[in-house]
Image 1 (cartoon, rainbow, N blue to C red):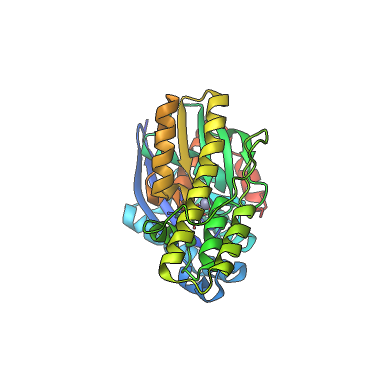
Image 2 (cartoon, rainbow, N blue to C red):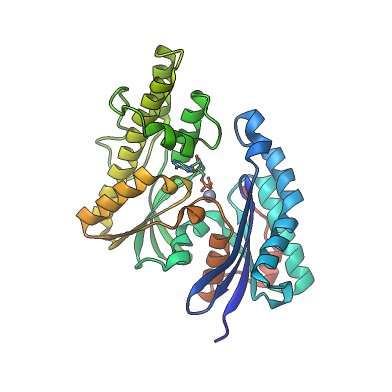
Length: 336
Ligand code: KG4
Ligand code: ZN
């Protein structure tokens, strides 16, 4: 069979992204362009949905052209166009998905709507994949979930956050300490020189059944500790970052370990922006080892938001016969 060329488009948060994949026996990423908007949002200390939507509308066609040019592929050569149709900030999702609809109508290349989380869930397939079914720890700025992934379109949720997402907790902690966005990498860097035992942090949902997560108690503890230790010097900031990171990762590991034992899955996979945290990755690796499971997490550039994972998910949904008809795809309303 001929290898297929797939264009992926992503615009659900603050990254405008496009990628071209060549999928035959292997998955080859021919190009993956991610245009962040950090500078546009920085003065506001967080992502401003209206600014994000306008930036996506400005950039999506440019980024798509760049991705096609880098891959040396032209639109008529494509087999599929896969685009994020939600969930996300609705203005941005509309900008990207509407562009995808237009491109599909103009070119006749079929459109596959993709759930952003499905993109993260299948992203490990960009690098060889993992044995099905696998336990997925999906940790991003908007979501924190434990899922059993049985295949494209087949996910069973074991747990989710009951308040903040893990990445959101990193971002809020960073903001409180006056660190630049995105907070996760800034906290990880700072935590390296910190004393993780200095500040006591709560251990959420201990003694509770199930595999849910909660980060709001940690957020409160960070705020109180920061107030008591004010003004924060560099070493206090490092200690606070280390204390928070240790508690957040311990919570993620504890619930993941319990879910892995219960599910009997032979493979553990991590995805989403927080999965680029190297301390979390090494603790997940150790957890898999003591549980007799394999561990895999995509390379950092495929953990954070990107369009290669959207292209792959769209391709796999289509191949599994789970993509909607072209008529339904074009009629689909993006959702927040
Ligand atoms: O998956 P992603 O790029 O976007 C969403 O779909 O949310 O994840 C972004 C999140 C942000 O909250 C960011 O602070 C966090 O991932 N993040 C990290 C690290 N790198 C990114 N959190 C902890 N440690 C990191 N090294
Ligand atoms: Zn994401």
